[in-house]
Length: 67
Length: 163
Image 1 (cartoon, rainbow over the protein chains, first blue to last red):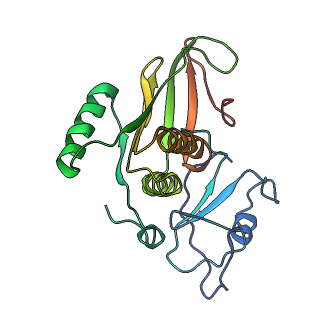
Image 2: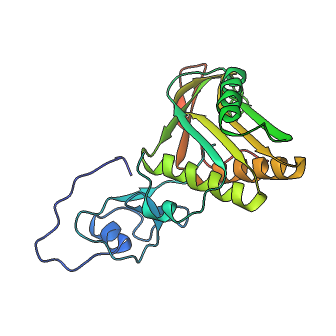
């Protein structure tokens, strides 16, 4: 992707987005996230179609290679 | 440390000692201090103990000489995940105490990268808990590794090493 963190101001009155919708709104390629990318909301694993709330911390996690 | 709500619902019977270490540590000294701490809490140390010490291989995935591994982690989530994984493995195997110390940052070849120790009443409980926890760490803990080779090049590691 070429970046690790981004602060993005969303449009006022926008409807709640899911991580998938936000991924696509941000123009991240490929438009369909690779299956090995995982999502975390507020530092807990979450699904791509979860509803984001104001103030949520969202992370797109590359394939884990640790431990 | 304030754990997230989903962790607070886990019934943690085992004593958990979880630490992310920015600097190198001596695993045998860590174990001795852990034993001392547990001895003060328990009447005696449980009968069975399984210890695993993982060190950085001195070669990369393509067998080139490796200088170091750089461990990046997701602060906050990583610690919470380690607690949850340790609590889950302990509960599933009736372990009484679990220690996980994991390095982050740049870890030189041959240095210790992870220490996992499990105390239980029986060897099977201790060994199974240790193995389950190690595999969980490989796949469910938000760490990412970058290889620094001796020639100065670096690259992110894709996936995990074989069991």
